[in-house]
Amino acid sequence: MSAGIGFIGLGIMGDGMAARLITEGVCGQSADKPLVVWNRTQSKAIAFAEKFKATGSNVIVKETAKEVIEACEITFSMLSTPEASRAVFEHESGVLAGVSSGKKIVDCATLAEEDMKRMNAAVLSKGGIFLEAPVSGSKGPALTGTLIFLCAGDKTLFEETEVTMLKAMGKASHFFSEEVGYGTRAKLVVNSLMGTMMAAYAEGLALSDAVGLDQSKMIEVIGQGAIQSPMYALKGPKMAKHDHAPNFPLKHAHKDMKLASDMAKDAGVEYSVMDSAEMLLKEAREDPSLNLADEDFSAVYEKVLNKKA
Image 1 (cartoon, rainbow, N blue to C red):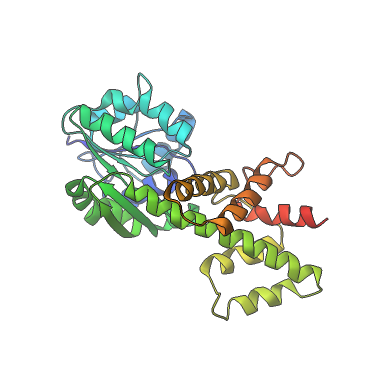
Image 2: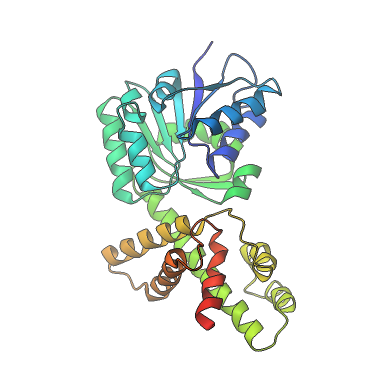
């Protein structure tokens, strides 16, 4: 049996991404190239494997992240927070413990730039190869293979994965630099702009309602003009119904916006509009009376309504 493809982290994003590697025929379809998985909550990994074993796919669940790395030539990692990524990466049975000469790590999380650089240096020090590949997109694009990969690091590894694995999981892949950190910079710009748009949209919908305008009609109007946005079209009707089932949790959206604000300060760039939106998401995330942290980031709308009240 040849080495499998590894996947670490089967949460909101990782579950869909790993599934695409199977359904698009990259791995898991035969004993020759299994998909080898690990998740901090092992029951999720077992459930994932059982779901695909029912279709004849070869999915192997390992007990540690280290074992995944050891079993695979290439391993993808998709963990939700810098804290989770660091814990899994540095644990005695974690990612770094399994790295040896030639092992290839593709990290898809959204972290601080220094986190990516630290992991890259650690992997290289053990003879491994590292690609930074955070994604633009949430749960839906992960499930449908329409993510956008924002990459930096080892260009050969990017080229190797782009035509098969990244293509199975995404609609586009961009390579910014052989210097790790540039992928994260791109991701933080994208997510801070997205969060700011969501905050503004929430305020616009709240104002529409407050002055007696029909929200459904306003959502239609917005969708017909120069400010139309796929995000508005998707989120608007749900926001009007107070439906914030998580695709991109508010706590993660705020985390990314705070990282972007810090990056802007370090770069000496005016970011006051983004900073105001970041503060609104922070208030929404931390308000104990609303309990919104695990809801979709569209739930910032509820904080806007709460402030108005």
